[in-house]
Image (cartoon, rainbow, N blue to C red; front, side, top):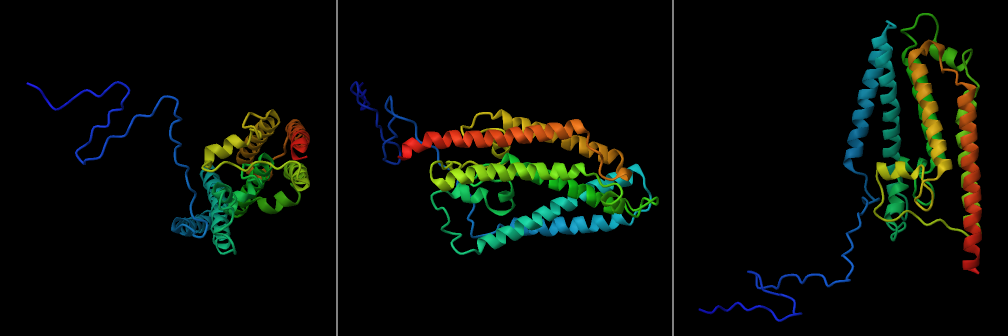
Length: 309
C-alpha cells in the first residue's frame, strides 16, 4: 500500500506545510550568521514613570516619621544608636530619590528631549536624572565621579546621624562638636582628592575631544544596569581591566569601610580620624588614576591623528 508522503530530493530543503497552510521555517544554511537579538530600548525620556513619584512620597514620609521618632529619643543606648544610623541612611536615600524625581521631571520638559540623540537612546538614558552625577560624557560610569559621590554621601550620612543623636547624648552637642572642636582636616583631603582627580580626568578627555583628534565612542545601545555600571568603574575604553582604576576603587572602599566602622563604634568622637597610611594610599591611587587617564588619552590622540589627516 502506497502513501502520498515522499522523501524530498537530496539538497532540497524540506518545506512541508503546517496545519495553517504555511511552510515551516527553512533551517539556516551553513555559514549563515545567526539572527541578531533585539536591542533593549530604554524608557521614553519624555515621561516620568509614576513609580518614581510614589517612591519619593513613601521615602520622604517614612524618613520624616523615623527622624521625628529617633530625634526625640533621650537614651544613648546601642539600640538607639543603631536606629539613628539606619534612619540617617534612609534620609540620605530619600534625598537622593527626591533629587532623581526632580531631575527627571525637569529634563522631560526641556526642549528637544524627545529628539535628543535618537540614534543613541542608551547614552541619553544613562545620563538622565541623578545618574549623570556618576556618568561620563560617553555614557559610561566614571571612576572619579563615583568617588566624589561616595564620599559626599558618607559624610552627609554621618552628619545627619550626629544631628539625630544630639538630644540623646547629654554630654555635648555631637553635631556642633563634629564641625568645630572635633573637626578633622583630613576630610578636606578625602573630599578634595576625588574632586581634583575627576576634574583633571575630565580636562584631559575634554581637551582631546575639543581638538577633534580623539573622541571616545559612546556606550553601546542596550547596555545599562547596576552590574554594567560597576564593571565600568575598573575597566578602560577597551573593556579590559584598568589597574589604575581598580586600585583607586579598592583603596576607596577600604577607607570607606574604615570610616563607617569607626564612626559607628564611637559617634561621640564625631567624624573619626583617618590614618595617614589610608590617606597616602588614597592620594597615590588618585594620582595614578589621573596620570593613567592623561597618558592613555594622549596615546589615543596620537593614534587617531594620522587617521584624521
